[in-house]
Image (cartoon, rainbow, N blue to C red; front, side, top):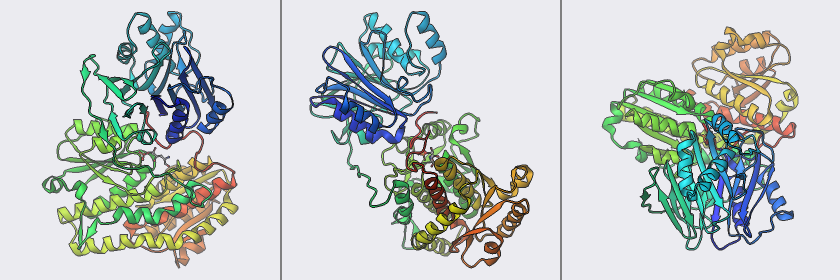
Length: 613
Ligand code: M6R
């Protein structure tokens, strides 16, 4: 994962690098560092901790070459080697001539490290990335240029590599390398910024070259020369970025997570806006070829984490409304299981960031098998948006909190629209039925809005009564199952407590052995065709001494009275209920994390965007 940035131009590089790292911190935040080319030497400052810690060190100490105009920076999410100062990037070679920053994983690092040690290299860190500096060192010592050495190194390493490197002896340019991890180069009039993502570039220029796999670029002030893997020069045309960064503010909330939970009504509203008009679903982005959509033989949803849970909801909705068989797969499993796909299959890739390495790879794989790919993502122009045949954007706005909240509800809303659209094209529902569902979907934002305060109060009280417990189960059936999965994920992500999401009917097949007094079970028991069965499962938990929290509809006394604690939610039709039921779960997780004094926006070990496999 990690965020990388490089600068060459006329400004002081340090400020550009630290600012760029702040903007890329969503990619990882366990350690950070910068390197600049000063007076005939490379100076490196790096430390464990967040970019703010690095910024203080840079301000207080550190780097003598404050006016240096060439440098690289890195914010890390550890893969190989603990998040310590020594493992932080940049890494240098034995001679101190070059420094590198890397985002990716080098899969053959063991054999390469052993060979480098045998050839006398002094490897200082436990990272896989440091090898790159030593391999480059060998290329340079044999008389190759930095870009020639970089091309050669790309041939030696297996795995994903986005790397930027600088050379003490060539302070006028940096070299960038890309394979399977994103890398973009912003070209200004007398400067250039290389970065993992556009936010670190936009302040400096809107002209951006998106590097392709296998390419190496020499980047100087206002110029770029790109080489393909065979060393041949490749002509590139910068594209103009025509959107602006919105600077995320907390707007009076104590943290981004709570703000984003409260933004869910507008995230859902904006996602459905203009997509149901005059009694018809209008998904202009995906309509493409309606003949194809009529003849799809199956849909495969691929996603990770929270997006996977949104995909689970989509499976229920598409099968129920459009009557198309839907498989759902974790993107990290999909391409390794030899899936059966052909040109009649539609693959729906769901991702907030559009950059998740597993999901991007799944898109590519699906396309290679002839399937059509629709991406459902929140970030305009992301890798997945570019890879897919069509994009259905969620319009949740930037999400800063690492634990996804508003993008999850926006994804579910988008997928419900997609399901209805397919039902419309395939005429599996009448236009009257579609209209009724779409109209009800339009009412959901208002219902969430009207209940947020009371759910917050209920969540505070629930966290006071069960917040000291160590084991939590979240149970649901039907569309309540993905809600249970997401409720458990939220709790473990931000509170570091053990939480399991289960299909309620599955408990008796094993996990019930864990249930005893002290265990907390959250049951999603809102109305639906399996509610009576969920309530029976709830009794089974009670009978074994669990403390039971229920998410039940307003006035459902049978469910509320049986539980130790109830979150009450308005009743909506079953397929739409996850849009409501998940919000109390998010607030419950939030309150428990706060009561434990944890940073809800940047939970340990996580990153907002996971760009390694
Ligand atoms: O950007 P994506 O939606 O592809 O990210 C997928 C997961 O990494 C993400 O949902 C993760 O599980 C979040 N931390 C959930 O809160």
